[in-house]
Amino acid sequence: MKIPAIITMLLLALATPVSAAPLLLTHATLIDGTGSPAQANTTIVIEGARIQSIYPSDSQPIPKGANVEDVSGRYVIPGLIDAHVHITDVEPDVAHYQAFLKALLLGGVTGIRDMAGNARLLGYLAQQTDTDAFAGPDIFYTALMAGPSFFAEDDRVQASAPGARPGETAWMRAIDATTDLPSALSEAKGTGATGIKIYANLPANLVQAITAEAHRQGLRVWTHATIFPAKPGDAVAAGVDTISHSPYLAWEAAPKVPDDYDARTHGDFEHIKPDAPQIIALFDAMKQRGTILDATLHVFQTVAELRPKTFAAGIMPWSYAVTKLAHERGVAIDAGTDSEGLPDDAQNNPDLKAMPLVHAEMALLVEHCGFTPLEALHAATQVSAMATGQSVTRGTIAKGMRADLVVLTADPDIDIHNTTKIAFVVKNGIVYRRDH
Image (tube, one colour):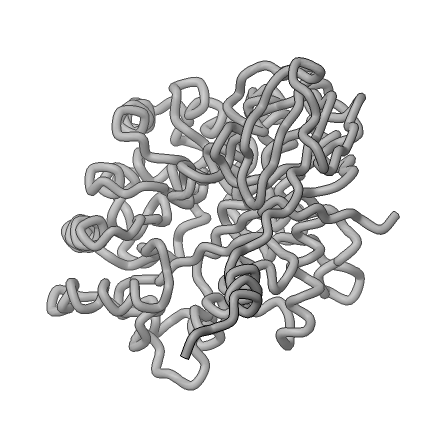
């Protein structure tokens, strides 16, 4: 039966996607996330979810039908990426997560790396934010691997795998010398995780074996700096992509590393110097291999202030000094908060009206670790994208990159705290505005 021409035309029209009008941000001061100086009077052209072009404002005609945002006097930075969060025990239900994730996004965070949680929930939330069904940052997450003794002693694992025996899920897996690593890592990848977190109570030979197999299967490898008994140098030699927590670097120069990660915050910060020869050699190896340091300063500062007896004396001055030295030695440092991403309110719930904590992490890098504001922004954008394995498509402002941007009303190069002065956020080419 012949289909009438008018019906054919209607079917073709329905099948052909209608291109949205391009969005132009004109007369912007552009800070591209690479650490390069700002570019004044710039136009950014966004088509769909991508940046189509960047050029000096008024050098090209405005495309017909374009949506134009004149951002004269404003500063455009890449969307911020918090490279170390834990969100799956933060809210009681999905409806609350919608408000929580939107608060992160409106605070300038367009991407997060969850460093161990309930992968079933993370997988669902990641799908929703990736498709923009939920307004929120894109989510990348880990599957955690540790020695069997960790799962026997840490009650947090039950919250991340409710209803399962600790250490026996694909995303919370106990590892020993008898583990079938190809199968364990394949199952971990099947959860949607893009990286493995090697957490605790594993020797150097197993860190090496996990890392090699994870990389063979296309997974990133993220670890605690000291895994107990494996040292930071063991992790770097194994080829891991990121090591977390500046205070744990002290164990590189310790005469003996305990077998149990429970000692992790009790390094000898009085006698082990940040510039000990072992630590200098570690930083040189990290620079050579491209290993990223996930410093996570804010969480240690917070706990040290609230519960000073929890940590060994001198932990914060030592942590600031060693992070500064790593930066001076050319180690790439991301911006991760080791938090839920937002501060708590008076009832210990996420404060949805507050700015995300990644802004505070950047401020610590500037105020205590010798970073310039542009270097701190670089840490929270391009380097954090590198840490998540996503730097090909996000973390900088350039042609072809995802249109994840934050428009500021004040210059962050003058004062890093100006990253909190947000006019609006663009994620995947969609504009989100804060209610003031």
